[in-house]
Image 1 (cartoon, rainbow, N blue to C red):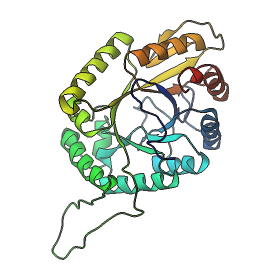
Image 2 (image 1 turned 45 degrees about the vertical axis):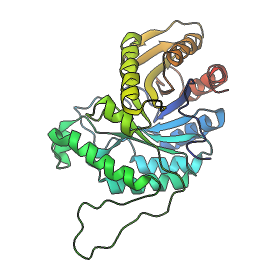
Image 3 (image 1 turned 180 degrees about the horizontal axis):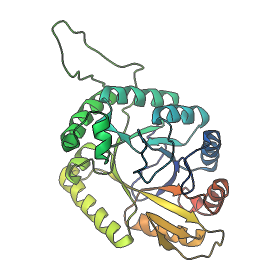
Length: 310
């Protein structure tokens, strides 16, 4: 299976994925053996994608206390423990990593997963983290574009390595193993770029959840940008949404930060509305505060996925 075979992004349809790790509020220590088991379950039950975050450093000033694994290590483990589900980085902080290192990681994961990898890319939004890595946050927009260009040249087919510098007598470099298909690049957040730039360079745009009216405006802005920058081409639109699933199937949806607390019936209705308004993929950031994550994954798979993953 290749990433293009797994319909994470398809015009007129909506697919559903899961963000890892699944934790509860204030949890800092994660049992990653359990996370791998949940990933296997999601794969078996027909979810379309597993999303993995890139959090290089932690601080008491950051709201997220979780000790995230290095994304390439976790993605390698997921590639070896799943068979069908797409793997997506959500998102590699491109401005804090050399693009050739990112390309090597992407090619490695894509090889291990037999073409199931989509490379989601972000720019990071924490100025002190830039300083820790010796980067100037004021340069992140230009750095993002420069690194994207180098990365895209390397992971596309045919592949081309763009060195930072080429001293006299330097050999021509390439990356192995060679790929039969280009690795898709996905903009997660804006990276400080215009939506027109994203529409020209990315397979789509992934954003975080907003209330419905704001999200409609966001999608309208995206569609206008796609028409200007890539008229007639398909460009995906996706949303990361927090889910606190009630054990009462009929509980109506109520707003929580970056998502909803809801029963499964209202969840399906919300997702139908999102599909009708132009969203192609939703990754669920599941809250396991009230219920075990396994129960939520199984309930959504049994009652909600069949409405969308036919």
